[in-house]
Image 1 (tube, helix red, strand yellow):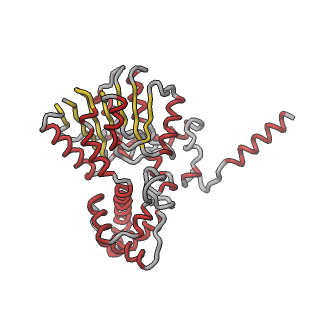
Image 2: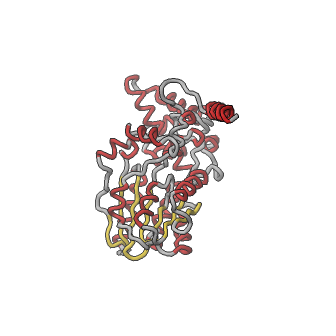
Length: 355
């Protein structure tokens, strides 16, 4: 009887496994081992060793540099303004040694719930850790309730969990709905945004949010096709529009140009539908009043538009005596980190110390 039960259990488990072609799975949902890191730790370690990020996870960037600058001490009150997978948050809470409190903000209800549960299993419950489902633009609201923060971290990059999951529509590499919202329960998707946009506005968005050199041509191609009745509601369809727009590029260079323009187009749309620049502007303006005297701030940026806003805000507050010190040059990840984590290449860290 027991033998039959065991065989039945094994057969049931076998049926649940996702079949895929080739030696290694390629599609997101086929990577069941990577998506269960607690069960298949060896597989996850092997993927990381190759310089890749396992599906459904995120490798925190510049942890060493962040910890060295923030100088977290037990008993302090800290904030991770962009929780994501919680990699940075975990390391910061370790520094608190069970004393003080760590707050985190995130507008993604899907991933923040997973992160809260994951960190609770590691022993970081509500006694030391609070997750707030809110935009970091509202840091002043949180500070009014929690008190001034002794250290603040903001990682402005999109989490790998969002990029890799085709259901979220953040990348053209896998076909999925053209959504791009951090919180899919609010606002308009990228597909809805494109449906009624004028080409001049789209061209301005591509140029202003991503410095896209083919902004006009891509915008005209997309808008003209939509006016002819075409619906661009998937990541593959948008990628095809960019391929169509860039037919003028010499064939030898076309593949690389399409790849880069696709990445920039998705970036520009993501910034737009999530109102990222407006939120960052508000966050930077409210940040000094939310930090205690001598408090330390570290911000990671991933493209020039973000970095310009951070640099300008830090400099303005420094000149007014609000910050006693700011980074004169950006801090970059080490060459070794870039080899082991390809997504670290474009990272820049700027810091400030409250007067």
